Length: 255
Length: 306
Image (cartoon, rainbow over all chains, first blue to last red; front, side, top):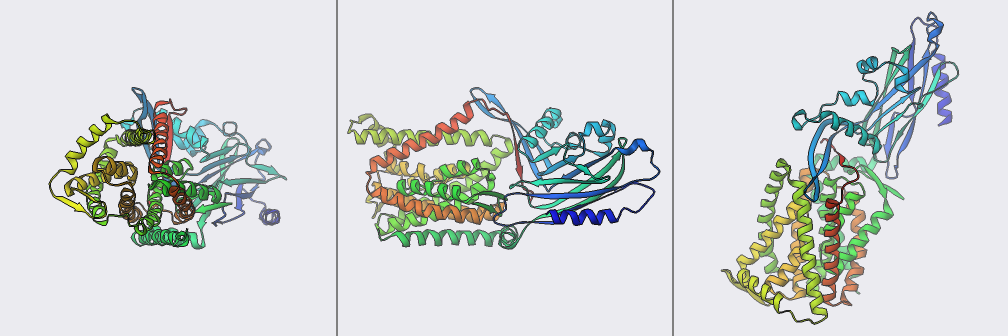
């Protein structure tokens, strides 16, 4: 990992030829993360560099970077319980048809310190903005704000969404690094990593990368059979269950 | 040691899963029930998605019922004729149950129905078994109970289409058996259960079938319904996890062997007492989740987009 990091940093440093506008470049330590049987979560490194503009006035020495990682989408159901006499039952439900089951926002400073709410709203930077534009289905629009607030709270509570306002650290003059953490229950699929460079609270450059959390080997084959040939898969599992039940009986029947 | 489950997309401890499968196996071997009513809430508690849990539990109960059925077959305590009549009713009942399931889901009454169903059926069956085995063990006079069950027995077992069952050694109505099969299939498909724990007391109390034959015949019924449920769930929801099934079945085989050995040393009354207490316990657990004010009134559930 460390060797990898120096190599990347070196390559990025080489690209820093003088130029007119700022440029943002970053790389990930892995493009593919394999979901092997012993997968229990992992960590990806982000390394990058800011190519400075020689003409920019000295005041803009403070650069900021916000990196947003968005994982595969799932269908989300948010349910509220209320009391019906003495028992507590689900009384209301809202659905989100495309909800990122993984999201992470890493930044060099707290987002509120980096830029204004107006800019964040335009660029959809930060979870509060992501939630704001999310479409809730059900309830004819009633209590939408309340459900959005709860959705955000639960996504953070269950560690589906994570944010780290110190997640990006500058080192040297214009190099930076950070870490993307994936839990053991992170969904498989494509993860988009979008980086944005800000100076004086305004966006000045962007870069993006993608990585895959993939099932490999036997796991990939099982998943493929289960989704593409479900009837065959069901018959295989049924056959396995019967065989194992019979074997269990045959092994112990002497007692 | 952690193991990654490819369809559930979650990594869990192999040891925990083996212990869980073994524990449920002991109970199913000992008491002659599938154990789905215990395994389903436990797997959901471990964080496995509900759809995966329901379909995988069906495959696990299939395996344990094969072992169980083979045992009873050797002891010649299965009435195949009676089992096929019950299965026929079960198929009709499951079909109707699935229809109601879809309707309740659309109307938003599903979760409350399932909750009340669990509490009512597990609680009342457990209570009935508990009281009855206490009466038997302490040889208490039971005029009142006999009066009730004799009466209900006379209605169901004296319906038309009478037939003498060879293995069970009872003369009873085919129509009554189809009806019982239907009721179990109906309840089972709504609550996501095999229904063995309801079928067994019904066969004992309403049809007066001898204990060993009840266990053997119920095992065949459970096998048939859970086998079809495994295949249908895998086909319809594509969420069955073969790795999870394999681990739990392995644990279950060892567990049910222990359970079956222990069963030989226990009387039928004591087994009913244990099952009764277990059912009451699960019913109380479900009831308490509904009565105690939840710490967090909101829940977030994610479902894969297929």
